[in-house]
Each structure stands twice: as structure tokens, then as C-alpha cells.
Amino acid sequence: MIKARRILGALLFCATALAPVASVRLLAQDSDRVRQIGGKFMCMCGCNQVLTQCNHVGCQTSSAMLKEISQALDRGQSETAITQMLVQEYGTAVYAEPPKSGFSLVAWTMPTIYLLLGTVLVIFIIYRWRKRAMPAPGTAAAPNVSPELLARARAQAERETED
Image (cartoon, rainbow, N blue to C red; front, side, top):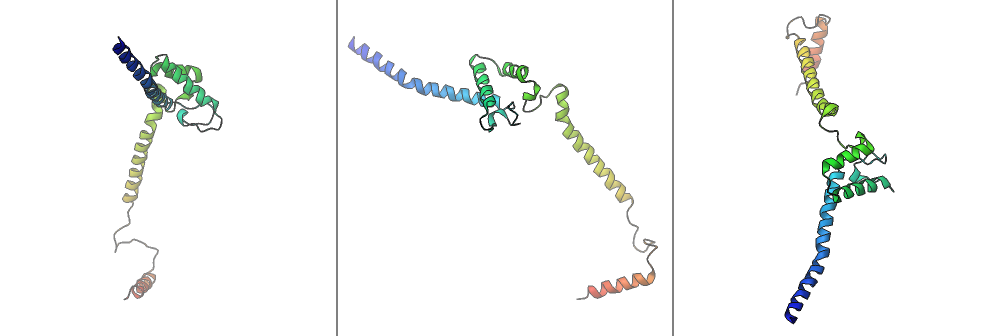
């Protein structure tokens, strides 16, 4: 009987000693999950920063929003439900990046479209410039240059390039 009490006491001691370690680990996991979800939203205090990175001095909004997310996770809500809750409360401006559906898909596709159109435009301009290339030497390249001016320029170039 005394042996059983000692074993039970030892188990109780170990359980109470390990409880803070387990709770700290659960809090850390919960905190990481809150930061992961909070990183997908904007802080609504007007600082135009991501919720988890708001460094606005005395910002009550970011801490309240993170607390809301934490409470929703504690209630067992999914990330989708939390997203819907925040969008209902703050509107679509709460998204850090637009969703990849509906009209917001335009925000994802326009950079690619602009890049392709710009590339086509540059290729077209280069093609037009090359089509208007200078005529070959010895042909009537510059009818406005007199023969004596051309001879003088060649002589000056020859003097300046002598070793």
C-alpha cells in the first residue's frame, strides 16, 4: 500500500512537472498558427502593413485582430471560416494578397500580360529599325556630304589614328 502511494505520488509529481512544458509547447504551436494565418491579412489600423508585421506605435487593431484569430482557433474554426469572419467584419481590403478567383484574378494575370505585350512591342520596334538599316558603304549613303568634306574627314581620321 505504501509502495502504491509512492508510485502514485511520483506519477503525480511528474505529471505536474511536465504540464507547464506541454502547455508552453501548445501555446507556441498556437502562436505559430496565429502568425501563419495573420500573415495573410492586412492590419486595419491604416498603416498598410501585414497584420503580423504591424509596427504602428500603440496599435490596438493588430493585437485585437490577432486575438480574434487566436480565439477562433481555440473554438476549433478552420482557416477558411476565420477568413470569412474577417472579410465579413473588415471587407475585402483585409486581404494581404487578392484571392485567385473572380475579378481579383485580373490582378494576378495583368503583370504577365503586360510583360508579354511589352516584349512584343520591343521586338516590333527593333524589327522596324533594322528594316530601315543604313545602306552599304560605297552606295549613295549620304548625298549631302561633298567629296572634299569626305576626303578631309578621312585624312583627319588617318592622322588621329597613326601610331
